[in-house]
Length: 86
Length: 222
Image 1 (cartoon, chains in turn yellow, cyan):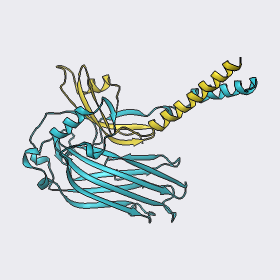
Image 2 (cartoon, each protein chain N blue to C red):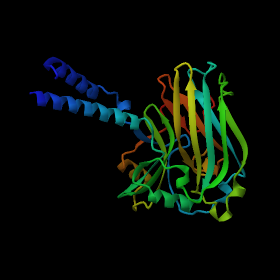
Image 3 (cartoon, rainbow over the protein chains, first blue to last red):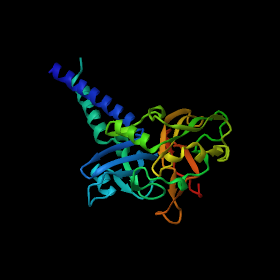
Image 4 (cartoon, rainbow over the protein chains, first blue to last red):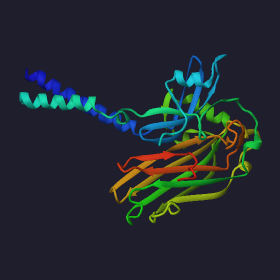
């Protein structure tokens, strides 16, 4: 029982440290988000950081025929918004 | 050793911390803005476009919000460098980056051309005018070799900022780069490209001590 309690305690400390660290990392935005997927390549530059959001302006290249930059970005998990919300 | 009840309470605190962590605290979201100077475009490599290069650039750095702006002990210190990066050099550098998010220093971009640099410390911050640093007449087009005047070349602002807010009794640090193209969209016609004439750098300290930062042109209403 003592060992189990000790393990639970260590697990909790680990969880808190992990969350704390990821919070610290999450506070700042990457200056560049670059990569590619099946639809093409993208290069996004940070324009603004506020309220926990990182806003980017992007350009795409090597697009798969019939697909747009929007497809590339959405496939890579970007949320398309009209302007910074703050 | 741990007693039963405290251990269980501690476990509850841990679970509660995970469950009720605010979303903005848990993850920084990425969004692509489609208006207000942002948006996405398809790049046509090495498109010669000397008409999209302004003869001179202006630089406006603003500390928009500072809770302790009127406090005497508040201060704002900014170091900046403005660079031009040829398009081919920029994309060579991008290809060397790992996929996903990166924070490369200015030195990472080979072939960059320094346009301007400066360092300023301000301690009188009561008005927006006092919290603005301006630089005019930065020679641009003449510093870029003609063959490198392509549409998708890059302007880079490298900055390092230190802000002390005497109201919050907090010092905020931030450094990084902002990248943009030599052109911008025409205000009345988003499809028309015109030479960019000004680079912006904006900061704002929130009441909770976090920092907003941006390279977008400030709204007139600010």
